Image (cartoon, rainbow, N blue to C red; front, side):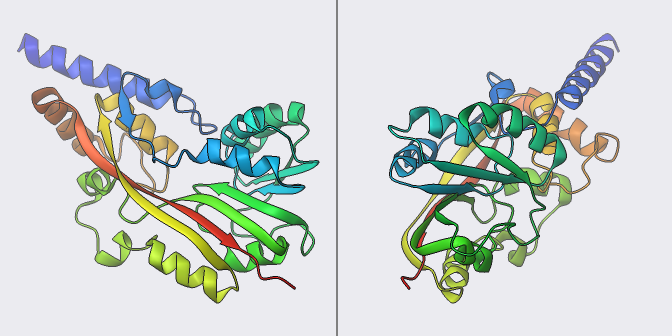
Length: 264
């Protein structure tokens, strides 16, 4: 009985901890020692830094808290004369503004599903890390002729081991929704020339249930409407599994996407 009470208190404490951590931005440092995710071999933020050095006008779409753009600007041998970022979630708009304003970056509040609030041909480089959905026609519109779209996208079936623990088996169309071949076809239909497309499947490990709770609160599209109360049975089952078997293993998918706008 005492062991059962101790396990219950341990579960409650971990869940409360995961539920209390702020979710703004894309800083994942809280997960250190609690969860891991392998990184793609191409090193997106470092590669972006090199692209920034050769650009004149840059747009970062759906910048989150601005962390990736800030990292790239800090390492770019030369900063672009103009850099602008968009973000749709108000807490992230505030965080990105505070982080990027000292680097001379304007952060524009713009819903992710709305047209980009910029003139045609305004940018020679558009970047994005993990956009919810790339709006190809808008990307083509704001790129100058010959301009480049350089992004890292979330791929198909990412972390679906975790998703299916909470939601059950998912239909095949849900698994393939972000397939790189579909995105290539959509980009080409909008007029872009795809010059590089690489995909990798990467190991994730969750070492305690607090990490799972925080992850699902932060990456809200994984289990839509996730709350601790609504999914307590699944959380308890996963907590017991981690205690008995060790880290819960899932796999993320990522693809590097580089495309060029048509020349006039």
